[in-house]
Length: 152
Image (cartoon, rainbow, N blue to C red; front, side, top):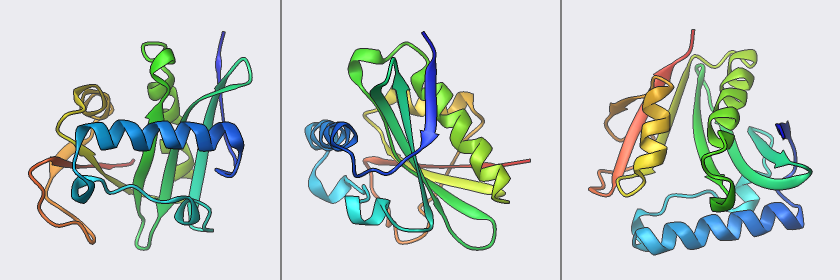
């Protein structure tokens, strides 16, 4: 069984269910002020590429690339259904997002994740992301990990 990943609208029932699951997971780990997720309206903007991962047609993961200026972009809303973790969905999703970023001329991807998500941090580090300080509108947050990767 392979994972199919494509650009899709976040406004689909199965995707909305996954986003709600992601929200609940983040709320179980962090206080509201440490959750920095984009809402549905922000995910549906022209500068955002929203990706959906499917296995046998079922939505199992998602991620967004928010394209900014000067060759920079931010990775947002990466989430894999817990029932499919360990099946390389996150790896495939991140590789697809990075491929899209390169095709758009992005040279630097930044992200923020939480300290209580060692699997996500490990995935990003395996892909070459390095720790950095807060960027953009983020302020220092002891529960956040800020990372970036230069694309070749």
